[in-house]
Image 1 (cartoon, rainbow, N blue to C red):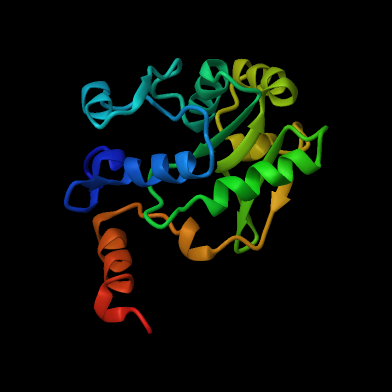
Image 2: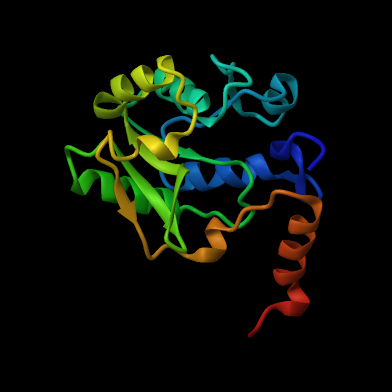
Length: 184
C-alpha cells in the first residue's frame, strides 16, 4: 500500500482498522487492541494500542503480543486489511474453538488455505508452543497450526475474508461493492 494498511480509508473517515475493530466489537469482544503500528493515529481513532513486542519479526510476533496482552484466554486475531469483515467471522471462530476444548486455535480457511491471521487462539493451549517456536526462529504462524491442534473453520463468507494488499486491490474491492454494482 505504500503506507500503514490499518489507516487506509475504505471510505472517507473509515480506515480499515475500524472495520476490523467494529467486527470484533459487534461479535462481543471484551476488548479490542491494535498491535503495533502508529500509536498516535490508532489511539486517535479510539483504539487501545499495544506495542509489538517483536517489531519487524513477522506475524507470529504480533500474535504473541496479542496473546500476552489480552485479558481473556480466547483471543481473536484479525488482519486489518479485510474491508468486508463483519461479526459473523469472529463469532464462527470462537464457536469453533469452544466446540473443541483441547484445540489451541480455530482458523479461517479460504479456498482451501488456512488464514492464521484470521483466527481465534486459546492462550492456555497455544502460547507455550508458539513462544518456543518463536524462540527457535519460526516466524510463520501457518507452520505451527498442527502443533497447537488448530481446527479449520470453513464455510465463511468469502467477501468477508477478502483482503486488500495494494491500492489496485482496494480499488477492485470498492468497485465490486459500489452501490451501482449491488443487486436488488
